[in-house]
Length: 593
Ligand code: C2E
Ligand code: CA
Ligand code: CA
Image (cartoon, rainbow, N blue to C red):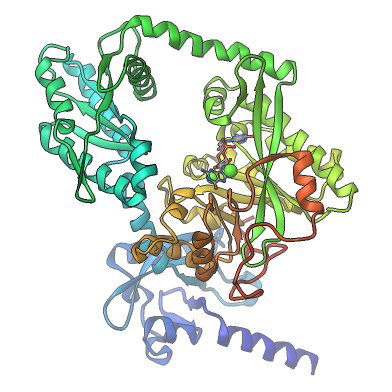
């Protein structure tokens, strides 16, 4: 009786599964398929039985399938593998499936290939959108920093071959903030689009104009005749700002400051980062002298750069003398405003410069490798803090710690995480490690191994700044990711009258839901943004609307206050959000660690 009950349960599971499971025999013919095949692909199961699997696949993929099948008849059982295949729908379209292939266990007496197939077409469509988004600025349609970098790097390679210098200019609008503050964001945006258009029109086709962010544009100039900036070119770069801008039927005059650097100009060997840094220094110098000026990078400015490099020794000194402190920014349940946990953000109390923000030293620490020591300290200090709060009763508070790629490339990082948890008697499920997409894109075996070990202990893995760096989304499953942190740039456009702004964010949230990932929206500043996120089904949020990052004592005050964070909401409690105090377990595929 018991046996029968189990069989019935099992049959029920198979009937209702949304994944398709197929079994293919030694000669490549379909032997079995779950009813979900009919729902997903429109073919009737009985028609397909006994027909070749290859006929169902895209021609490019059927060869791979046939190789798998002939490998199987060799008798050796193969390790399961995960592949992306295009599968033909009854209406002729191809849909993308993620397919796990494994051979039937030997003791079953039969030889066969089991395919577990999951429809990922929606994810694929999102990938393509993100790809465009990752290389273009949405407001102006210009290339963004990532694409600009790519173009500059190609130009540098060409320049090394031909010996003809290239120049990079950074154009920064003067007093743009005033326009934004007095005329509103819509007017500011209109003006930026107009600047973008004018810059493109004024420059020759062989130049690249990009928007780096905010009111900062960059120009790559390749066909320099004599390795210097001619007056003619300066005039052309400046000309978009000669005529006033018409914003809301009013004429506004806006000037720009420009910093320029030449690739061959100094004894420095310049790569993209260095070039941009030099152009930035020149821009800074231009601004110092007043508005609407152009400054070309020269070696005196170099001294300032050397000063920056001194930060290296300053940084190591700061670590020795304990100048770092951690701040904590609450992460809340969007529907109720309850605090679920907090993100740990490092601050530097500099003896003369005051409070220095991570933007000014994290990338330097990454370049020099000092991030490893700093990151180790952050993790330990944060977990010690967790223990203090836990002793006061806040045991369910979850800490999110930022981790750099450099840290994960160190063998032993996974052990370090376990050791820290042990040291402070902290359960792994109270810790989230935030990694940027670029970490997953690196895809080295050392990172994969360490992340697998870490995830297996129960520590959660979050993708930080999600949507800003393009990489194929298949890593989300391969790396046992639990949480996506949707970048602030996606949140910025929400809660406006333009419904288009939210389309991509909404697509991200629903993809995350289908993969059973938690979603945290970052940088929520306005109630309207929160409400739109809530209606999309985004469960968690973080941003100034709730609280800025605060020192540990202040976070304790927030925790001990009974009332939820943020302005009261008209949102109904419960709502359409699965309230995940503890993240739902991520479905793991058998055999993948
Ligand atoms: P992140 O991980 O994306 O952190 C979020 C940043 O957004 C924080 O800046 C936070 O203060 C800011 N933020 C939060 N809510 C809002 C909002 O509503 N509006 C605005 N405008 N900003 C908001 P912060 O603290 O300056 O950190 C900057 C970056 O530095 C972090 O970005 C992270 O990448 C890095 N970082 C900070 N601490 C660490 C650390 O311990 N280790 C590593 N590797 N990186 C760190
Ligand atoms: Ca983060
Ligand atoms: Ca982030």
